[in-house]
Image 1 (cartoon, rainbow, N blue to C red):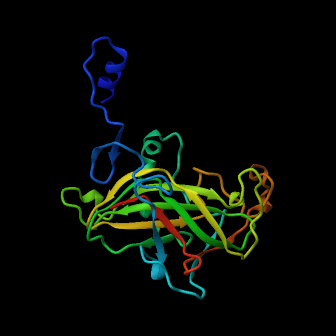
Image 2 (image 1 turned 180 degrees about the horizontal axis):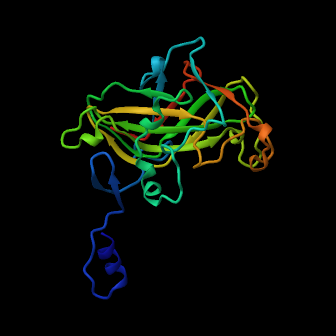
Image 3 (image 1 turned 90 degrees about the vertical axis):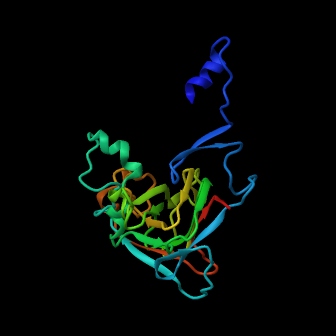
Length: 272
């Protein structure tokens, strides 16, 4: 694809190329898409709007908003002394092969941790396509004064994949990112998080062009530490976390809400 493009623009009398305005890989169907525009869905200015995928009771996930009006939430204890690793240990940065592959590492390595919340849809009966940037939209509280929020959107493969047994039950990360709670109101003026009071954390995640195939499930994982990819949050507010002392690092209880008025979700760039 690249050579004909450069030949066309850099060489004399080179044949014309039919390179489309957007040529992007489809990570679910394993082929390249030729598009006129990108993204296909977004908050403003796109053909399709974003659609929320809500956290639901019993760690479910769905497009129906909760009607709960009382306390509907899930909690976990985040401990900087026992951080959630971004890949299974041991983590060695000298191991270049693992570094090249970490973005597609199986997320089952953290699914059973008590400091990771995991929400999953039932098996899909029809394909679900996303093409754009998902948006994490969390309503959450912490017992500390600062917190990190890691959100991962995952494609869960069926327990058996014909011809590829290594992919049975595989949890493939489609989009994931981290947000520091101190910046919830302003990146220029960070502030401490009021302990025990729900706050809204809304942030863009990396773009994806992916199809969740029938029989697969959509999963969302939420945690507070992604180590050592990102340095640990002390969970005590300090002016500069790079100069945090050992005594600043403390356990914190993180609570994620899923009520009608505080409906945590991941907004998907869904293409109908």
